[in-house]
Each structure stands twice: as structure tokens, then as C-alpha cells.
Image 1 (cartoon, helix red, strand yellow):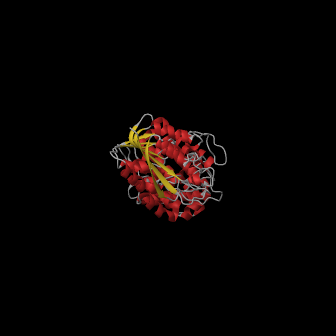
Image 2 (image 1 turned 90 degrees about the horizontal axis):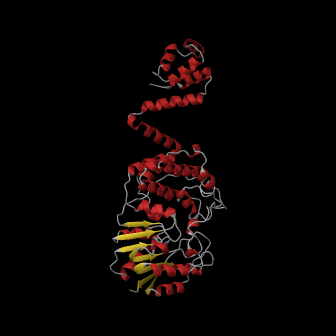
Length: 443
């Protein structure tokens, strides 16, 4: 039954027009008018234009009503009706891009943990790091990554050791660890339904929101910033309907996908001062897993060190003055979602989680950490950026100072590996090396 007929009949009766008068003024046969109003046939586009003019109603609105009736009658299975209509809308919205977007969402591998842009990532050094650890340690059961960063080191450790402890002070990193690693109930199909709904959103029909007002036209294209803000608020609105794992997976999925369209060089200290190319946000789920042998913390590393025991502690702190909480403040704001007042060109929140390792107290903090941790082996990653021409990139702990600190607590061996650093600024690195210090602590 076509519903447009009921609309036309209601309008006609409200205007006090008789059906015979409609026939006289439009030339449409009376029997056809009757069948149209009874929902037994659709008016032709020409007939609908005549009726709209006669009744003084918008012709475009009525043509849309006619088209929707026509679409509904073609649905073969009403059980999938609403979902089919949503997909049809998505096809219209994205046009020729829909096929590639659909395939990217449904038929490609989930987003890997290592795919995120992050300063100091060890993703390309993992084989060397663990080969070195294996060759210079023994009887390892418990591994602690106390400055976990991207989480890629802990990810390898989870498949090698009986128990893994990972820690980072950033809220966004903590959410990511829980999404990728923590055990917990979650329904992948349920999460996929949320993602499909978010991908079908038309950003041009969304209102401005906290995220778009602050970051739109800067770190993200304006219309996609509206979509990001809408999605973040929607996740929060449905938090009670989600398990903790589902909530974390949705947030981490959002972070990893917007990282691909961010108008930056890989961090949020600044944005690129050029017109932003519109890249539609197409969410693809992260490669979330569940491990029973992981313990996840969000604490000051020096305080946590006093409460845990491990066979190996892997230490990869920030070494220069660039605070990670400021580099990735957009993700911190997105995850916490307390909507603080932002300031400055980069729209940063008030300072929080500032690390002593980025200050003149870095050496003192490192000495306290290696003395406090209950571990048989200390493994420290270090690179030679202390030769940098940029003062902000210069290491706060010099090479010889670090060796001295480690030698105070045990016997230290030094290994080096050529490595091209991730550089998002103007610093020039020549002969860049990554060092690994392996210290066997005194009994």
C-alpha cells in the first residue's frame, strides 16, 4: 500500500476540495484519483506535480515521498528493510567511493596496533630488541614495559612470557592497551553495527559540537570534525549499554581511524597551514584481542616501580623536552571527554601528566627508577638524538650519564643498531642509531 495517497487525501480534505473538482482542474481520471488516495497505485511524476500545484504543497517534498514509497515496495525481505535503506543511503552519499569503502571495512584485515603514527615507536626494531634480550637474559617469566607508548613491545612480550605488565601515563594509551589486549566480554557483531552506523552518517547534516568547534578546520577537515565529535558523544551516550571492552574497542577504533585523516605530521603540537583535503572518515575496526597474562596500569612509572616485581623491566622513557601529553593532547581530550577549555593555536587543555623525564630532573628520575624497581634485568632503549641541532630534541640524559646510572645497580652491556628515526619536525638526524643497554642487577 502506497502511503503518499493518504497524504494527498488528508491535504485535499483539509482544504475542502471535492475529488470531482480535482478531476476537473487536473484532468486526472476520477477512478485513478480514487485508487491513488486509497494507496492502490502511485501517481506518475506528472500527476503528482499537478496535484502539488493544486493543493499548494512543495512538489519536491512530494516527489521524495513518492520515491520512498517506490523503494519500500521493492524490498524483498522486510526483516532487513531498515538496514537495507541505511545502506542505500550510504551508497548515495558516497557514490563511486562506496565500493572501496565497503571492502576496506568488511574484507580487509583489522587495523594493526603498530599502524598508528607515534613519536619514538619501536615497531621496526622489535626483532633486534627481543633477539638482544633473549641472548643476554635467562629464566624470564615476567616482563614489564613501564613506558609502554604504542604498546608494540608489550605486544611481542605477551606471546613470549608468562606474565606481562604494561604502563603508560596517557589516558589515550591506556584505553588503547585495554582495547587491544585486556580480557573481557565483547560482541564483535555489536561493535560492527555501531561502526556501520557511524560510517553511514552524513556529516553535512550534523550540528557543530565541542570537537568540531575546537579542532575543525585545524587538525581535521570541518565536516569530518563534526562526525568525529558526534561519534565520540554517541559512544559516551551508549556507555551503559556497552561492556568495558566494547567501549574501549570503539574508542580505540576511533583514534586509529582519525589518525589517518589528521591534518598533521604525526602529532598535535601543530597542524599543517594549508587547505585541508576532504578525506571521508571510514571507520575500520582495530585488531582487538584478549590476553589473560596481561596487567595494565596508568601510573607514574617511578611510583609503580616500588610495587611490582619482574624478571625484565624494559625502559623507554621520553628523553627530550617534548611532553607526550602535549604532543597527543587531542587524543587525551577525545578519550577523557570532559570538554575542558582549550587555548593557544594548537587548542591545548590545561597541563596534565607532565613527565620529569622531559625536564632537567630526568637523570635524577632515571636513577630513582632503576634503584626502585625489583627486577633481575633492566633493558633500556636509547637513541643518539642528543647530537640534534634542535634544543627541543636534545636528550635530557646524556649517553655517559645513563651508563653511569645503570652501572651503579649492575653490570651493563651496550648494543647498537642503525635506525632511521621518525621525525615530524625540522631536526636533521645523521648516522642515527638506537642503543640497547642490558643491565644485570646486583643481587
